[in-house]
Image (cartoon, rainbow, N blue to C red):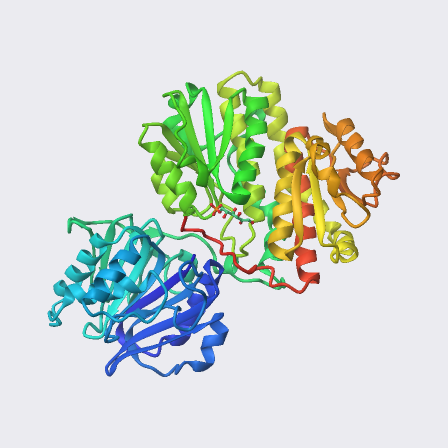
Amino acid sequence: MCGIFGFVSKKPVTGIGNMLQALKKLEYRGYDSTGIAVVTQKGIYSQKKAGRISKLEPFLDKKVLGSVFIGHTRWATHGKPSDKNAHPHFGCDNKIQIVHNGIIENYKSLKHELEGRGHRFKSDTDSEVFAHLVEEFLGRKNGSEIRYFEEAVRLSLKRIKGAYAFAVIHQNYPKVIIVAKNSSPLLIGLSDQAKYIASDPIALLRHTRKVIYLNDQELAIVTPDQLKISTLQNKEILRKYQEVSWSEDAVRKTGFTHFMEKEIFEEPEAVENAIRGRLIVSQGLAKLGGLESVRQKLESVKRLIITACGTAFFSGLVGEYMLEEFAGLPVEVESGSELRYKRSPFDDKSALLAVSQSGETADTLGSIKEIKKTGLLTLGLVNTVGSSIARETNAGVYNHAGPEISVASTKVFISQLAVFALLTLFLGRQRSMSKNMGKLIASELTLIPRKLRTILESSVYIKRVARKYFKYNNFLFLGRKFNYPIALEGALKLKEVSYIHAEGYGAGDMKHGPLALIDENFPSIVIAPKDSVYDKVVSNMEELKARKGKIIIITTSGNKGLDKLADEVLYIPKTIEMLTPLLTVMPLHLLAYYMGVFRGHDVDKPRNLAKSVTVE
Ligand code: F6R
């Protein structure tokens, strides 16, 4: 949903190279156009172009000297990807330039008003109104005092409705970036030589690990020597920096062809990192430090509402099966985009759990804010430390999976499943789960990383299956009970990276409709570990076979009973039923990845998508 990066340095530097490197780290947020602006002694130097960063690069003069740099990589919302719609956007005389991540909901009426005052617009975007608003409020007060510039930005922010992270520069202020945030993420990095602004800490790792997150409706004046954070009402805020612990290797491909491939191969490590130090196997207990402050409240919770989007939503569905069966806790899973507008009745024995890799998804965040108004306890299951969802919720659990760069989520999905298993232990042992059951779940969970590594050893075979099937245009994914959400996840992943039409369905529901699609050209991928619904799923496969459907089966190693039904069989090691999703999903991630590669797509950056969806 657009990436913003910028910096103000103490001395003038030729910083375009650094800017582009940082913007490339943010390309996962949007990659349909790119632009940069630099305040130089002769005025503002800026360039923008439709397309990826590499398209803009040849047009840039990398020798340009300046102390203030801002850049943007776009994911279009208003106005198609084109040179004129790329950021930065200018006021009438180009002295003010802005980059924006978000949506200005009332831009039409503002544009109409500003046009009435003589402003001329050059793009079809909502963002451009902000540059004109600042210009309008600044009027002729173009003196060198920062307070005029600050006040104009503050007044402009008060006029707009919607989500934003803005960076604003002005030709007459060669040492200042003004930034502001509401719903879209923005943080400030501190170093001795410069101050940085970015949408995500991964863009800052080469420069600094000291970061300050802005909160909603805050504005900051960023200069090399000063950082002033204030509310829109101009109440000054003092905030200490936090240290980012991610390593730089985490944001490099380190020998893999794509980040998606690297991140699937990191799935065993993602589970290890999620459970490290959090299990007391001999007691059958889980220790979740982030929930200690609300431990007592959690004891009396009678209903859990899980909210999330996309892949994180599917992890929530697996969580529902785990928590209901093993912790005896009633659970509902609601899409973030729906829950925020639903008027569901909640009593004070309910709690909300938001699941999100980025911690910035607007729909999920919107639901939390809505539900908080009812006074409910809110929890987060988040990967990005310090993100908006982490800060907005009362308590929570981090994944510790490290940064996930590929747009399609893989290692964080598996890590979310591992945390749901921990949560099941934590809440289950507070309720009726026996110590023996706790010990079984805990000990089996510790074995999952090793079992995932054995699946990786069969990646060559999975690649061969992908090569055989990548030209098919439709796939049905079927699973039941714990593996029903895995069928949904498998289908989503295939769609995203290979653009093949895929449907995820409950194996038992197939006969209520999708079966009509099946013929020899419509293969099915069936998740059928040896579990409590295995026999039912085998019957469903018989129904597919009777319609000449090809079947790729994922089942438990040692199960030789499927040879007659299967066109291909992928095996996973044995584990307890509740944990099978952690193993069955890995072959599906690999299949989707290889099919996307065989189809010739940029699997890390699927068309039309962006990693962090900070608009509605
Ligand atoms: C799919 C995918 C998306 C995200 C969804 C929520 O592979 O990555 O469906 O899961 O946009 O994102 P987060 O988890 O950041 O809230």
